[in-house]
Amino acid sequence: MYLGRHILDAQGQAFAMVGALACDTSMEAAKLTLGYRTVEWKSLVIRGHEFHYSQLADYGLTPEPARITSAKGAGVPVQLYRQGNVLASYVHLYWGDNKGFVNELLALRA
Image 1 (cartoon, rainbow, N blue to C red):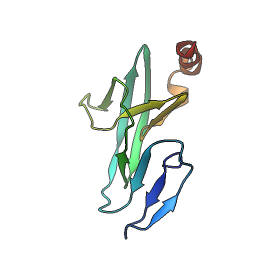
Image 2 (image 1 turned 120 degrees about the vertical axis):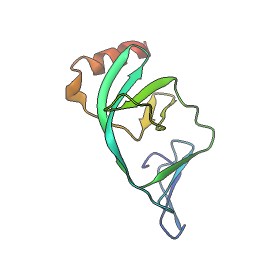
Image 3 (image 1 turned 180 degrees about the horizontal axis):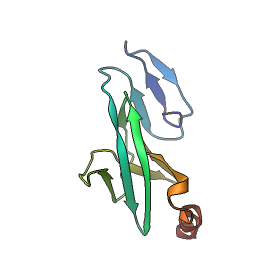
Image 4 (image 1 turned 135 degrees about the vertical axis):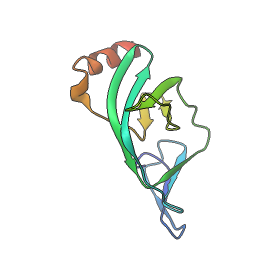
């Protein structure tokens, strides 16, 4: 949200954000999305959760080929995006779940 271009409130009024990612976040027609998630991307596996009322409108962001599932193992529609050195998603990662995650992530960058 913060790294996107705008946040649109429930009335559709846009508020400028950082603009680092080609996306907007909208609170219009807000619907709760909630649940535990497991993210499998490249050789990395990490858990987290999703909790939001907003929707993402991406403008040219390309989803990474990642498998993101619910606590019951079902696929969920949330995406993982990468733009340069930024990985972005609605999934809030729990870094303590995989102590080696940061080192593995940095090794993939090399």
